[in-house]
Length: 114
Image 1 (cartoon, rainbow, N blue to C red):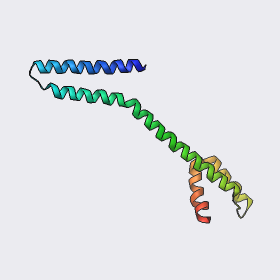
Image 2: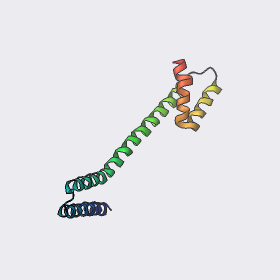
Image 3: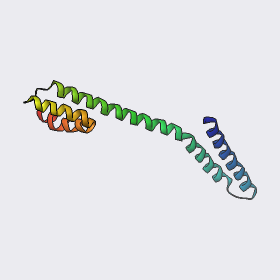
C-alpha cells in the first residue's frame, strides 16, 4: 500500500514536471508550475506524518484523562465522608460516568474539601 502511494506521488510529480516543460516550450512560466507541484508532493508526503502526530497527541490526552480518573477514584475510596452512603454514591458516580464524574468529583469534593 505504501509503495502504491509513493508511486502515485511520483506520477503526480513527473506529470507536473512534464507540464512545466511543455509550458516552458510554449513560453509559459514553468518555474511557478514546478514550485506548485513540489509543494503538492511535499504536502501529500506529509499527510502520514501528520496523522501519526495527531494520533500521538490524542493518545497522550486519553492517557492523561485515564490517570486523572484513577486518581479521583483512589481519592474517593480513601476519603472519609460524613456517611458511608455518600462514599458509595461518589464511587458509583465515578465508575459509571468515568471522566465526567471525575471532573464533577474534583470540583464538588476534592477542591472544596481539600
